[in-house]
Every structure is written in structure tokens, then in C-alpha cells.
Image 1 (spheres, rainbow, N blue to C red):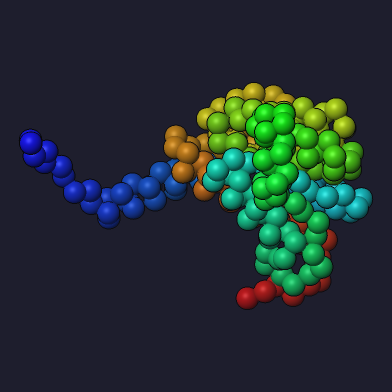
Image 2: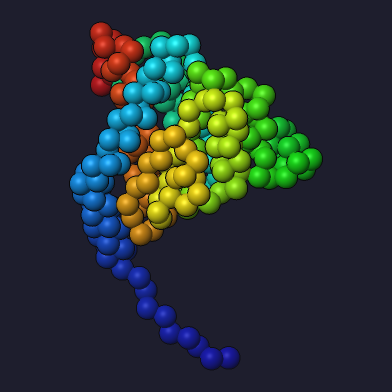
Length: 207
């Protein structure tokens, strides 16, 4: 048996490299005026959605599924201030629904079929896909158009087809999935904070 010598990675180097890439991506985001303008419109529409009695539906795959649940929790519980709960739902949590639709109709329909059952024109759908190519997110975005509800997509790597289907495509910079996912969380928290400040300006901020 041949012994293969491998070098031990330096954890500090990995951390510094990842932090550097994260900083560079955030700086690029701050300099992307089109992205910032689209974000402002998207966040304002979520505010309008809640003012009209609408709901926010969120979906993604893998780590983005976890992000969708994270954001739904911030709306239903709170982000930074004590206030009334806001209706937000991740479409990734009900395993019976997901497996039934996946088995009967195919995985690409696991979100779109839920939206057909739930989505109203004054609601908003937020899809999260780092590649912009996730078929189940694309299918969900198409349903939004059929129903007349506005859609937002958090994406990267140029945006893919999702950027052409969403009303508010937010294509973040970054050359790695992990960096793109970091920026998606930044966008998510910023949307939620915008909504909290707009709807509950007099509520005390949580420390």
C-alpha cells in the first residue's frame, strides 16, 4: 500500500480567505446601484403586501431551504423589535406535502403546487436559489405570474432564468456558493428590518 502524504490545511488561512471574499462581495454589493434600487423596490413591496393584509411565502433548496425557514421565523417572531407577528411561511417544512407532491407530480412542482393552493394576488413569493436555475423555484415564479402576485428572487452567478421570471431579481455578487448565501441572509435581514421599521415605528427595539 502506498502512503499518500497530504498537507494539513491551515484553519486560520481558510478563515482569513473566506472573510476576505465575504468583505469583497459585500463591497461589490454596496457599489451595485441597480441591485440596491431593486432591493428598495422589493422591500417596499413587502411592506405594501403586509399593509394590504397579504402574506409572504418563501422557498429554497438545501441551505436555501434553511434560509427560507430562518426568514419566516424572523417575520413571525421578531427580528429587532417587540411587535405583532407577521404572516410568513416557508414552503419547505411540511414533509407530507413535499413528499406527496414530489411523488405524484415531480420535485419541480413541490413549491408551485403549494402556491396554487395558497397564493393570492396581494401576497408575495420570495424564492432563494444561488444558481437561479432551480426548477422548482422557476415553476413557483411562473405560478406567481399566472396568479398576479409579485415575486422576489435572491440569487447569484448571474441570476439564471430566475432573474428573468421574478419581478424583483436580486443578483448578489460572489464567486462561491457560501459567499452568495451569506449575502442572501444580509438581504433577508434587511427586508425584515425594513418591514419592522415601516409597520412598527414606535415599538421598542430589542437589545
